[in-house]
Length: 194
Image 1 (cartoon, rainbow, N blue to C red):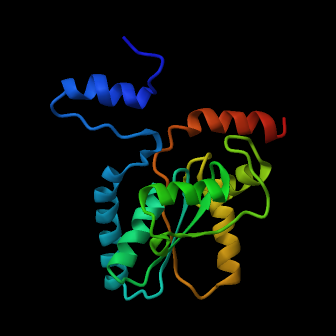
Image 2 (image 1 turned 135 degrees about the horizontal axis):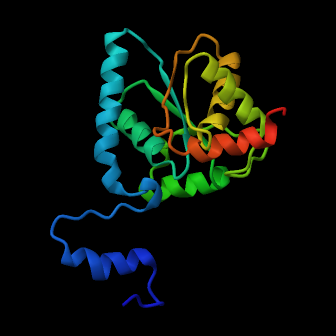
Image 3 (image 1 turned 90 degrees about the vertical axis):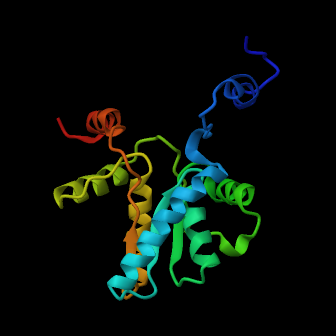
């Protein structure tokens, strides 16, 4: 039985996982050191692609919740002395929260990604017309992305690109689109003209 004095994570680690021989517990958001292995593979693939395409000074841009992917990409490039910079933005909890998440996984801030701050405060999960507008523009161009993390990052990346037009940028898509099944109707109800 679940003891109220334990967190869910503690209960899983102490009571459930010891009974399972081939189980791995990954905390919500993926903020754990076990994620580094897969992200390192992604970083190597990105590096190989950039070398093959003769691209130098590449900037990787992606949004962050816990910042795990951004951190481990940046750490890989730093550890291997590869000239690829990771740029991210805090979608959940703000810049200080994101810095705390980075420090939890890697206290050496020399390998932390660069955080681009939003000039406007956005609340996670709230609907914003500019998020819907950028999603629509990109959808019309054939680019599909999710409506929770990616809109803020796209807006900040486009602003960054205007300020640094010569720098090559790769955007890291945040993955699944299933969340759009509920987010898109919410946006349509709020912002589409009847």
